[in-house]
Structure formats: C-alpha cells, structure tokens
Image 1 (cartoon, one colour):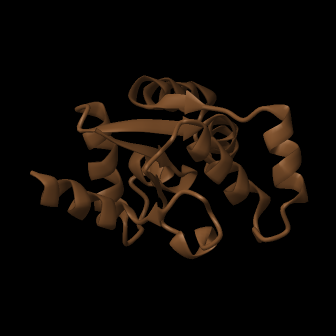
Image 2 (tube, one colour; image 1 turned 180 degrees about the vertical axis):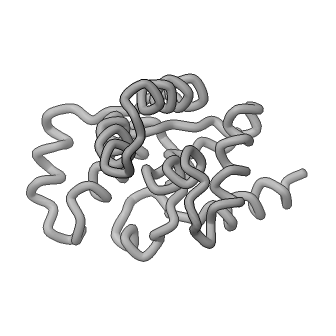
Length: 143
C-alpha cells in the first residue's frame, strides 16, 4: 500500500471545501485514506496549524475540534524527535521551515509521497512531493 504524508493545505481543502484547483482531488485523497486505499499520515504540527487557520477563518471551537477528531480518525499522526527538529532548524536549503518539518515527518514513517498543493516548496525534500491530482492518477493507474 502507498504511504502518504498529507500536507496541511490538502487537509484544509478537504475540511473547508475552499475554492482551490485541487479541492476535488484533495477530497479524493482523503477519501482514499478513509477507505484504506492509501496509508495516510499527518504531521503532528499540522494539527495546530489546522486549529489556528480554521479559527482565523471564523470557525467556532466546537467545529474545529470536530475537524481535528475527523483528521485524527482518518490519518495516523507522524512526529519528529529533537535531533530531527534541530536538523530542520539548521537546514537552510528549505525556504520554509514548516515544509522541512513535513519532509522529516514523512521520512519518519517511510512515506512514498508528500501530498501537497505546493510541490515547488519540496524541491529539496527527501520524500517525493506530488499534488493531490497526481496522487489520484497514480492510485488509479494501479487499479
């Protein structure tokens, strides 16, 4: 089974159904994880980003907790230890520290892919980044 680390932006597309060119394929990816067609993971720190972002969008606390419970039901949580975080802090190749943490969390679960709407942000990642649409096409080509 394909293992994927689902980036925060894909999860937010799924939860909020926001306008995004990857909205439908983000929903499909999360449904594939729900149906165990994919082994899905979420980086531990993404949960706090979802909490914060959905709060800024005006979602009430009860709804935000419901969303985090849903995500935690669909995806397993991946984390990074102290040494890996220090390595990420010192890694200047990644423009965005948070993307570097996503890569480290993907490595920690031996993910095949990071699923993100911003693949360009992962040009230096150890784990290949694909868009939700690309992942759906990969899975469909295997069936």
